[in-house]
Length: 177
Image (cartoon, rainbow, N blue to C red; front, side):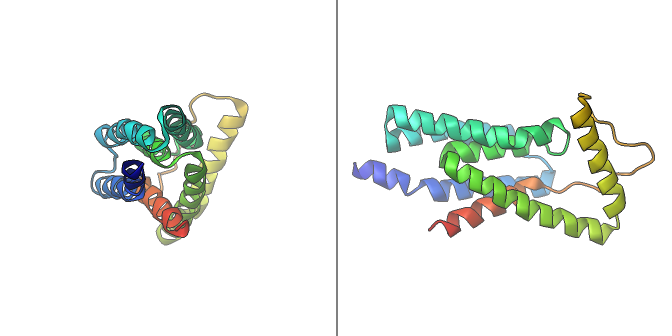
């Protein structure tokens, strides 16, 4: 029992290490590698099982991963987010469970949204970006599978969203202690 408690106390710090590594790589390379996201997801299973037992731990791992994946998958499908970001949130869910990944996703969206708005204001791309967002949403509503950027509009750029996921994770982990 003491081993499970000791292992449980490492879940938060391990998750912090995962998201900080992802953020650093995302800042440097503008991608989050599969070895990190899939590795984190796979290693979380035995930790969850050792901490909560085989049935409860397996289900916590699976549900956390699925909810983390499902939360950002629509944004990826609409080309509003990269696949590494989706896989990172899924890995965070595998480590921390459904309840925490929901809170982290919300905090991440708020932090990422504020960051994006500041970037739009600084670059002067606010109107053209809102036009692209409207176009993307209209494609989603009409059912077109792949939204296309309106002609003549340059991209406002992208942000390494792994940083926002790391900030959201840190915010919620420290807020819950």
